[in-house]
Amino acid sequence: MSGALVFYSAVDNGPEWQAALAAAAPGLDVRIADPADGTVEGDPADVRYALVWKPPHGFFARFPNLKLVVNLGAGVDALVARDDLPDVAITRLSDPHMARMMASFVLFCVLRHAREIPTFEKAQRERRWHYVHPRTAGEIRVGVLGLGELGAAAAQELARQGFDVRGWSRTAKSLDGVQSCHGMDALAGFLADTEILVVMLPLTPETRGLLDAAHLALLPRGAKFINVARGAVVDEAALITALASGHIAEATLDVFATEPLPSESPLWGMDNVLVTPHLASVAIPASAAAQIADNIRRVEEGREVLNRVDPARGY
Image (tube, rainbow, N blue to C red; front, side, top):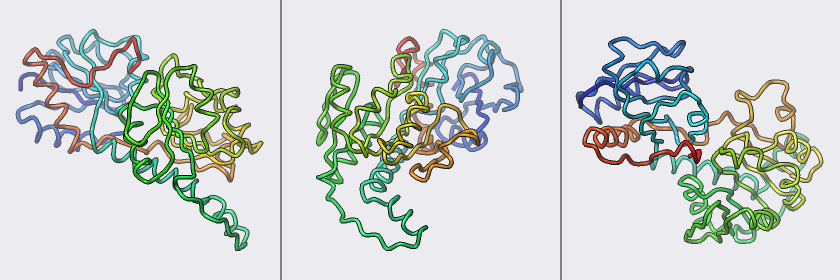
């Protein structure tokens, strides 16, 4: 392969990605940028490709011959919101291992709420023997808000486990075992009929703050809330109020408006909330490197790349 690829991430393992890309694309010159300031050794004119997660402002301008930017993950909101994006093809990772990891995490969250585990944890802390009769999965209505690649995988895994799964998306989707609806006109009815809500929407101008106090109030009293998408899709203050009042009985939150979650956030101290540090699904170098190599070959051959992002649309 001609040219070089620059890797930037302050949180991912650069040498691990370097090794995976060397195996998937022999001959590709992979250069790891300094996570502190984004500087990289070698002639910037050699760089044709960038694999990045939240690089510093102005990072892309250093590479005059850039042809492809790969976002280091499935969520691209942080990338497309920038005002310094180059006019080149931009792609996201679409790794089946990421989808399986997300589906398994969502299944864990749903099962935790469906089987009343937080109730038993509280009873244990209080040294009380507390029995709650289990319900079958088919009696429990789970709503998946967002049926993109990861949302669809999670919804179908829940359906395979026997849950009564409903899905909402911006445009029409058809998934085996999932009752689907679409469009803003259908959102209120979808929320009102959901016992366990799983938020899996991308963050776009249309979805930012979508789950505000009015929409959260549409959930049945005692509903359970799971967010594995982006924190800014939810009005966090409104969610805290709903949790404090009991309108939303429990929540599992993997994402937040500000990350890391500030120590002063009330969410840390709420015994009906489980906080996890944005780990529901992560990119796996060994499996994702192959699709990155494929897209580099497509660029070199003048073909259309796969999993292309439309910055104007936000995903």
